[in-house]
Image 1: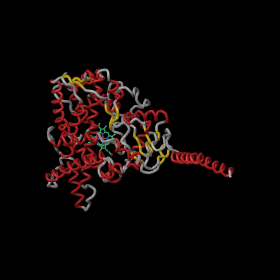
Image 2 (image 1 turned 90 degrees about the vertical axis):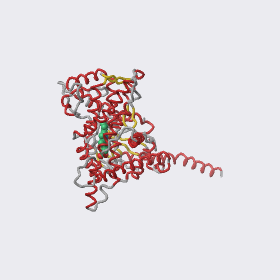
Image 3 (image 1 turned 45 degrees about the vertical axis):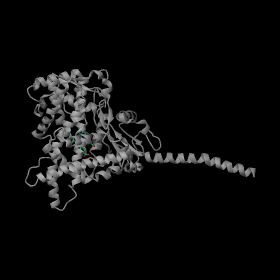
Image 4 (image 1 turned 180 degrees about the horizontal axis):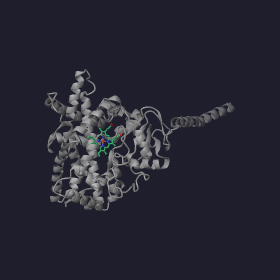
Length: 504
Ligand code: HEM
C-alpha cells in the first residue's frame, strides 16, 4: 500500500515538474518557428512582447537603440503584433517603393468608421484612384497657383495682428495655436472654398475638433497590438466620445458638400476647390452607373484627412522652426541678414525669391531633418509574406518606416544630432536640395501634401523672420536642451516653452 502511495506521489511530482517544462518547451519551439528567418531583434515577454521596454513619448530613441544594437532592419513584438523597423535610407527607399509594403494596418475599429473610404487608411484600387485625384487637386488649387500664396497671405495678416498684440502687451506666446488656425484656414479654402472669420462658430468647431483628434486616447491604438481587445472600442465611453466627434465632423463636411453642390449647378463651371472636383467626378461616374467610386463618404473622408494630415503637421513644423531660431540666435541672425540683403523689408518674401535664399532654404530643410516630425511612422503593413534583404517578412507584419533614424544616420549626416544647416549647403554656400532627407517619407505613399506644406512653411517663416526677432520667454531660458529634445505626442513636439517676438 505504502509502495503504491509513494509511486502515485512520484507520478504527481513528475507531472507537476514535467508539464510546465513541456509547455515551456512547446512555447519555445513555437517562438522559434514564428521568428525563423526574421530580421534580428530583441526577445520580448509572452503576451506583451517588448512593450515594457518602449517609452511611447521617446519611441524613436528606443527604436534607435535597438537599431544600433541589432542592425539596419530589426524585428520585435509589441503585444501580439510583429513589428519591423527600418532606419537605413537605401532599405527604406527600396521598401517604400515596393507595392507589397504600401498597405496600412487595418484594426476593425477603424475599418468600421471609415468603411474603406479616403486615402490614409485605404489600399488597392480605391486608394490609387483617390490619391491620384487628390494629388491633381492639390496641384490645381494648392501649391502650383498664385492663389495659394494669396491664401497664405490672408493667414499671415491674422498672425501679424496676434504678434503685434503680444508686443503691445509685452506677452510671450504659445505659437502653435496661431499656426494651427492659419493652416486650418488654408486647408478650408483649398478643400471647401470657405474663408472663415476667426470668431465664426463653424471655424471654432473646426479648430476644436481637430485639436481633439490629436488628443485621441492612447488606448484606442490597443486593438492594433492586441486584436482580441477590439470589443473594448465598442463599450468604453471615451471610444464612444471619439466616434461621436468623428461623426460630427463628417456631418459638418457633408453640409459643406451640399453647399458646393448647390453652387456648382452647371457642368461647365470651373471647379474652385477640391470638393468641386470630387462633385464633378461623382456626377460623371454616376452617369455611367458607378455610384461607388465617389460616393459621399469618399469625399467626406478625403477632406477630413486633408484637415487631419495637413494642418497640425505644417503648424508643428513652423513652431519647431521658431523654437530652433530662439535657441540658435546666431543662425537666426544669418537668416535675417540674407532676407534683408536679397528681399529687403518693403514687401513679403514670395516663392519666386526662393532660388536666391540659399541659407534660409538650408535652415528650413535642416529643421525638417533635425525634427523628423513623423519620427517612426505612419505604420505600413506587408500585404503578403515576402523576402526582403534576405529576411522573411510575414504577411500583416507592421512596418515602422523610421524617418528619424535615417535622418540621424551618422553615415549620411556629418553632425546628425546638431542643428546644422550646412548639411544642405555646398562649399560655396549654395543650397543643395533635400538629398536623402525624408521628413515626408518616400515611395508609393509619400506625403501628397509635401508641395503645399513646403510652400506654407517657407512663406510664413520668412515673412515673420523679416519683421520679428524671436527668443525664449525668460522663464524658459536655461531649459533649451529639454525643449529641443521634445517628445512624441502623435508628432514630435518641442518641450514646454513660450516665445517672445520683438519687432526688428
Ligand atoms: C510639414 C508638413 C507635413 C509633413 C511632415 C507630412 C508628413 C507625412 C508623412 C510622413 C506621411 C506618411 C507617408 C507614408 O505613409 O509613407 C504623410 C502622408 C500623408 N499626408 Fe502629409 N505631411 C505634411 C503635410 C501634409 C499636407 C499639407 C497635406 C494635405 C494637404 C498632407 C496630406 C497627407 C495625406 C493625405 C497622406 C496619406 C498618403 C497615403 O496614405 O497615400 N500632408 N504625410
